[in-house]
Length: 128
Image 1 (tube, helix red, strand yellow):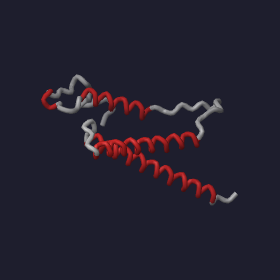
Image 2: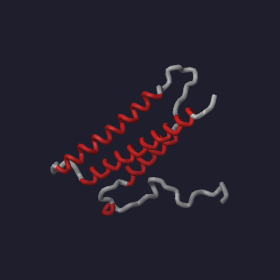
Image 3: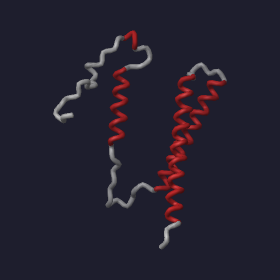
Image 4: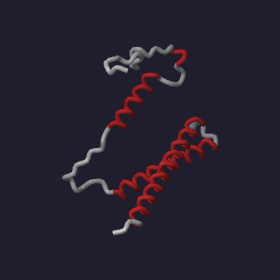
């Protein structure tokens, strides 16, 4: 493909036309804005200042990550318990989404732990 060709299906807010009757639960513009925001966050690079000796401490970052995963699990558990008790303000869909978020974050944390242990074992098995 030639780099001078334009995308035949550009996604813009002006060419997305959805009938209001089909828009019961999802607003396309809101979804598009959220996707753009997530893409912008993914493209950001962490700011590293080599002259600054007050960088992030690895232990603090790890502790913060574990606490964030713990908070997600506690929140999901609380929502699940409220739903089981019949709280009308808690929706089954929301409960399932929160449980999946907690599960995915826990699995990611386990993978990080496994990689750290592997790296530690590799360093400890090196001969000096």
